[in-house]
Length: 317
Image (cartoon, rainbow, N blue to C red):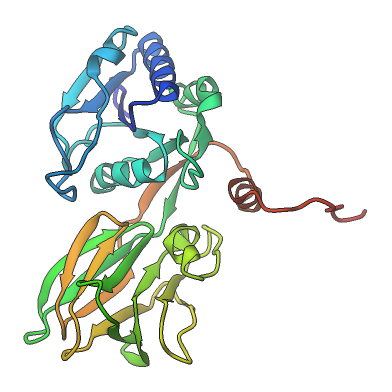
């Protein structure tokens, strides 16, 4: 940590609650001498299409609170030199911010201003307490598994593209017409061939996201494993698989079938032509994640999904 402390702020603006939260962040940062970094108003991340609509926060809004504000271009080096990335929004905003934090290995903290906000560590209602902890540097940093994703050319076997995923990589039908014919493989051995809408390869963090909606199990975030979930498969054996974190998962697209597309965290797109092969394995570098408390994951699961626990009595002494 340098003498000059800087927090990168990534916020989903346009809502009154966000405006109030930003005012608190600015005011508290100004009092503590923390510089706030924000993204330029007219820049997008490389993963975002040209017609992507994003309402970045106005630096003047933060400067009005007395905060020192610096503006940077949106890109893989946006978070370099920052102590942390503070995310104000829902899970989509968090995943966008992760694209900035991951290359710089800067830890993230999510404050939920969305709906479920499963990736958020805290809620906007307690932003003053959150700022107390951040300003005092009173927080822990843990690591979350990230997948390294590579697409290999059908003819040469050489890489034709690659990316990474915090939640999941989703292999889907490129044309959205008909069935995608896939063959799955674990550690260089074939497992099953089937037609499907697609297939998901997820981390424990992503097990509560798209993979969960597709019928996969919930995995506790401190578990190290890779989850494979066929999406609407037409096969007798196409159940979710939980593999070793040291496994390499491969998906081959039928050379005589339809082309596919791979979406990493629903943001970064890789083309997977017919006959190509996608491989996913645990990345050497993990995402750094700020924890403010030791709330059990079970409690978070019950709260976020509003699970029924009425009648629970607990363990008797």
